Length: 168
Image (cartoon, rainbow, N blue to C red; front, side, top):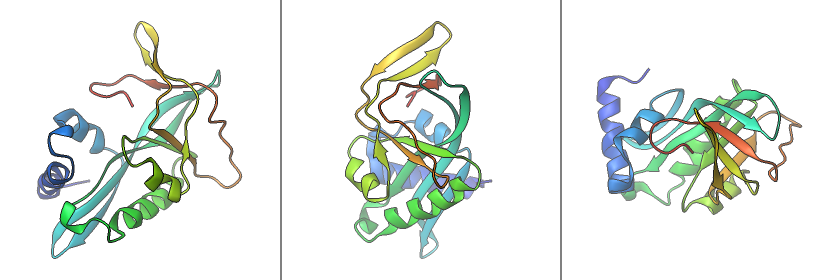
């Protein structure tokens, strides 16, 4: 559980890292689940969280997976391995609970590929009360099997449950 002081520090980190591109809704998405923090001189300089999401791969059953949110490193500390370190710890933590993790990224696809993530090439959908809505070929959607030997076909369709703000 994150106390009020850490939540405030995280909001400051996200603002420094993302500016206006990180909304209040993005913050609400990020505050659940498992958190990994990097702290320098008693200040949070890096963060990643894995939250529970319900996902349907192809025509399969809905299943609980980890969904990565709010990966950020303060600009003054970037390119020092902090992002890699928090993601490696998060991946280990998520593997204790979930079989698969997913994330959506705009610019950092190659960063995640170096950590073992795969690009999703199938069509993605959001399940709404009116049925599935196509997100098209979501260019930043990525997946990582967390259990040894588990394979995920990245060419199939994937469906997430809708939520306020960005579905993915």
